[in-house]
Image 1 (cartoon, helix red, strand yellow):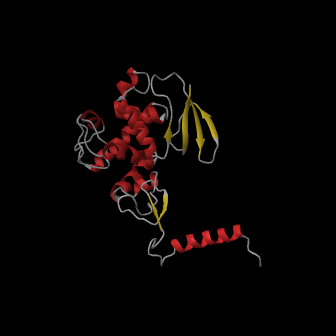
Image 2 (tube, one colour; image 1 turned 90 degrees about the horizontal axis):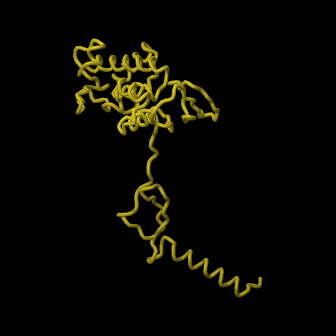
Image 3 (cartoon, rainbow, N blue to C red; image 1 turned 180 degrees about the vertical axis):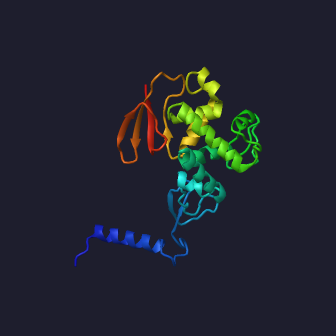
Length: 237
């Protein structure tokens, strides 16, 4: 077999690379495959403990992962309340998570108390004797959510706005109040539910048209935003 000079040079180069990076070589003892903090793969022979990390674990996202961090007794209570008041479990879970992170002893600067962050007036309306009692607090909070959801004709963002800022604020601004806290709250709760809200915040027209893209790719155009769906929501002005 005749080996040309060019081919010989190529073979020698490949052999050199192999020898340099072989496990027994003193100069390059081993090839290390690791991941940086963003999950990018790094192939190197000079490890740096300050910059290299283990392969990141897959993090569960969405309502299912959220439920895993909640005490079982609260999940059981929420399931019962969801059936009783005909509300979605993940809506209740998302609101409780956003309000207090399920801390029954939580107290806000404005005086809201407990898991569902009940104000004194709201607690009184629903017959709550002890706002720090998790069962009483949860049930009153769910009742209030149901009331708001019915009042605002199943408009989920508007329901959440009223729960956060109050009905008077919604009435005053004729829709979702332009408060940064309320805007952030709506997005956070819907994110916990596995939804992404990209609607326009501000004054609400007498009728809003919603465009919903489901997980299956179906497009739904409606003037009522339902609570029971999974997908991306936009508002068509």
